[in-house]
Image 1 (spheres, rainbow, N blue to C red):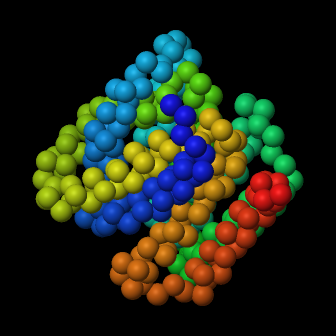
Image 2 (cartoon, rainbow, N blue to C red):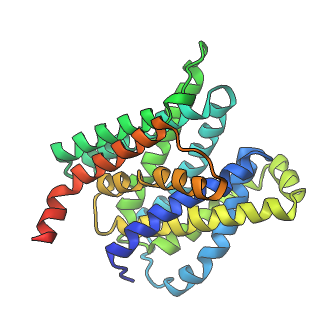
Length: 290
């Protein structure tokens, strides 16, 4: 199935931006890994119809099956590292470090997939990372015992970067919707092996399940599937760079939903992120306009 890139890009940006709001609400009342499992279960249900339709677009083999398993395991590992990092560090510190995922993915894509990364793109990434740091500067704190949580945060970024590499490597063998359902089935089954997670999920209220369902729809379903489709037509570095618009969208939506004031640092950081992305894609935009 071919979906135009001009539709995929806004969809995965919107998915990533809106996913954060119900997910943050969920994390305020439950364990992170339980929330991850609940989100995965809903996303699996949402993805089933599309995966069934595209079931013929799967070439069985060691590479494709290994890719599915790897994506599932790396997803669990990344979320576990995230939970360990947040135990003893500020969320702002984690977010800043976790965004190094884009740098890791660019390097890994160049090493293993031979994806070309231009100087212009590197400059754009540096500007975007400065924007992320500025956006989170007000809540940014580095505790004296920060080494362990920092290592966990970098591990989280690394595992998420590996997901991008593996997904790109097998995308010609398996449809993104089939890949999404397959990795969610494996990940959910493994997570449900934990009695603690099962007990917490069984005690959730209707409102808690509703927030998990919303997070699942926008994140692992809409955002992830459209993002993976976009990897068919563009490099990992470009797709991830465009995805950096998601936190900017989150800030804007929170402002309209809750009346949350946008601080000067958030505004300045958002402008830098947009500037870095525009700089990176300026030649493409100019070529299309001419």
